[in-house]
Image (cartoon, rainbow, N blue to C red; front, side, top):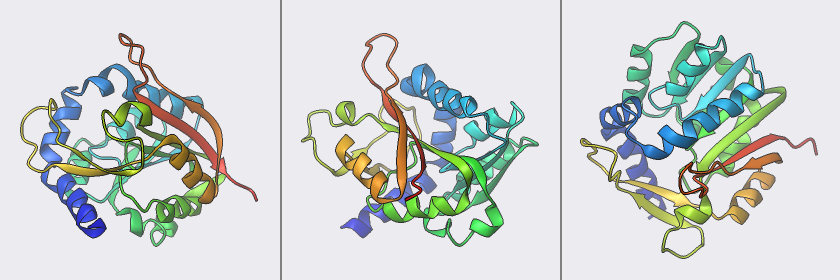
Amino acid sequence: MQRDHREQLNLSWQANADAWTAAVREQRIESRRLVTDTAILQAVLALAPSRVLDVGCGEGWLCRGLAARGIESVGVDASQPLIEVARAADSPRARYRVCGYAELASQAAQLGRFDVLVCNFALLDEPLAPILQALHQVLAPGGRLLIQTVHPWRACNDAAYRDGWRVETFAGFGEGFAEPMPWFFRTLESWLGLLGESGWRLQWLQEPLHPESEQPVSLLLLLSADAR
């Protein structure tokens, strides 16, 4: 079953590439428009990096935003259709590579080292320890990892507050989404335990709020490599 979930997750990002690109570029997703896009962009800029790796970059909006501010950006994603549309919206200080998370370690030499690594709503699979460990190989000395994910207390909805697979149907994101997307829900305790076990130390935690409901929309984590 776990293999089926992973295959369906990958299929979703292949099949929904055009619909996702339209939803992002037309700002159809309220949480992104009002809260989370600004939250991750400001968090990256506050670190004043010279080189950023966007892991799971999608159609490239964050890389373009950073490149417009003079920051060299590299985006990697397993979805070739998404990488193609990212390249089509080319920016002189942003470049893109088709690269699945399992391939990061093998491509570390080609990618080089980065001051900031970003995983913006990109860690959706169940076995995350290998990718989190592989990220150490592309982190420059003194670099940081930024993770933004759904806020566990809001995302559980009426389901039990425990780790497990959920399904995103993309309802309200507009037309064209051909495949639902399975994703693995984690509690806050599970997130912090996983990161610690993978060699990352929490520097700070933020909970960006919706401007009207004043409820947390996402969980934003800044991490450094554990020197132990």
